[in-house]
Image (cartoon, rainbow, N blue to C red):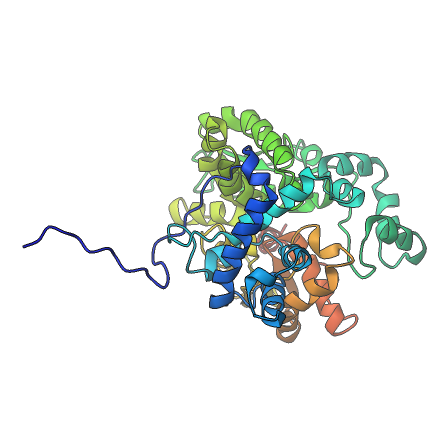
Length: 453
């Protein structure tokens, strides 16, 4: 019998688990425009012949339409503007990579569309093509620190109903007039967490978990109530967590292609938290985008950094951690029904962590409470959706989510991503003016409410 092996035939798609290559952002070829253009057209040709991702975001319909409308329906005829328009439609949600594309690594086609879009933005950043407004908007730590002492005035000025001042802000910041901007708070989560908490020593998990809560820039400066709710739930379950916040995870800077800044933040945060990790602490994130950065994006930017690798292995999303406690030690009693029901949106960056619907599992532990789940993109990705050029697209992409939330009409609308939830409310009002609930909720706030907090 011959020992020669026939070459394996090329497969239409891959059944292997998706994997990602480190991002070579420190190599000059990464910023070579001709090399990028060649790779973009290669990937665009694959995407155009497949089209499974047509309904995810604005990038793919834009790309497909431009190819279809060209004289020979060829990727060779894509103009620089066509490519930029396709890139600008990407929110870096990762859903094409995680849920749709059959050609991601280890498939031989080696398609990673989000990281290709990231490469384009990094080239733009190096060429100085990011607007001043864009570069200032993503400085979340600086903006939060400056706004904190005058949070009331800032919130008044940025309210979209304040037509006079907000019009000026819209002009200077290229902000859409209908977009809700995050509010600021005078007391950070770090400051609030310094207050003593009563830890339930009778809880099954008491003394069995070491935990540090990574505040995130959003929960620290904009919505510390999320972190307060988490701390109350943890204390009720016997866990006396500390709150840590060395710096932002860098997701806003990632959207702008500032990979060097993201890497610096990764080095700073991972170095600061390494002693806790070595001491056996889990690091719990409150916002899935931040957890995703620490788990997956940081190790791809700094694959040789031991602190980053150690931290990545120790990070859990808030719902992932609480469900793990429920399954292993058990939760404290006292959960009561939440009247009126909850519409729960599972954000893209929760789904991209590949941990399952942990918030759904968590809220289903609340007795006699109707939970309606929406697992689809809200249309908003960080600072992208508030921009004048993007907001209408974001509302369009998120309309099915807003429509379902409106139709279900539960008393509470929650999302694993706080910014996504605010955008869903925006979308509900776009369908029916004044129909959105008065406020949005984080799942851990719903869980705290069930405990009577």
